[in-house]
Amino acid sequence: MTGERPQRELAEFTDLVAAVLGLDPADIVDLAGPATLGGWTSRKHIELVVALEAAYRVSFSAREVFSIRSVSDLRSALRGKGVLC
Image: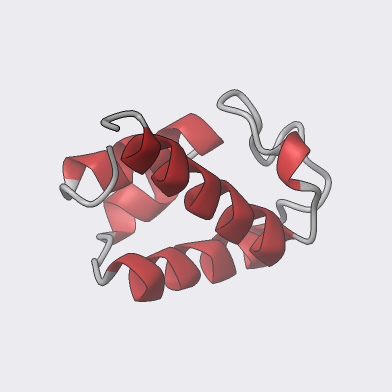
């Protein structure tokens, strides 16, 4: 089934983000970000980027790191690197 892979990838991404931020996966929605999630501090932002780099075997430039302002931005950055549907 073609829909299973994207759903699984999204669930794994969501679980990783939630774990790093210490939040419930249900809180990890596209528009959520540092301004709306109390657990997303500047320190957690860096921890999140490092965790994503390790999990997906990619590297983010400083410009990319500082341009991320939401969960949607995280997903877009990973899609841009060809590692997330």
